[in-house]
Length: 121
Length: 165
Image (cartoon, chains in turn brown, red):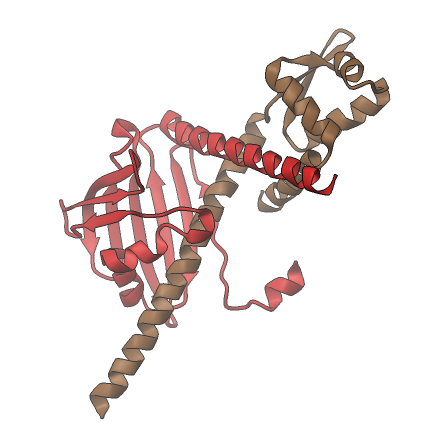
């Protein structure tokens, strides 16, 4: 699950690094659209747009649904990806917290050692 | 990635697992005796230094804790961002449990155990939500926050793109 999530983050980053794909996300934020509509809007071939949508779908930023011959794209992640993503963000918060806690405890240990030496003198 | 992990043998991993519909469990080993880890968790001036990690862009404005059974705590992160509850179990150096009441009835009960082994302390933080819906809702909140993060990332990428154009 963790490795899957890491890949997911990398995929999201890669997906957002392209100007057309960011445009597609902006477009889908306004309204759902078919691949054909998106291809028209961005003056691209159907194949080119399919590739971009595929990258966004892989990253979990877009979901698609085929009804008849039309594939409709909408913003959002699937349920499993959403859960994996929030668990990972929660893990990162605790990881950062515990890194700082480790430092505080380290300092307490040093202080205790120093106090111990003082007492023996 | 593996090479980097080998060069940092001291750094231990934090795990988060959804144990059931209503439970989340966070674990981590801290390099120090339970006595000191417990102290860092229960003395406000120490707690303040690590609970709101700078790397996450958080600032804890104030922190009051009355660590005894029935005693309350209140953490303030600025305007309208208060986290509060009360302690329901306090066993020095081994166990703490508290309520999380900022979300009303939907808040979890958190139980934390400190297990010392060879000078290190394994922390197991267990959060039990009143219902599956409550845990799902907490997750949705986090997912929304993630959405915000993606928005910021996107803005950043746009500004980087503009800089190089």
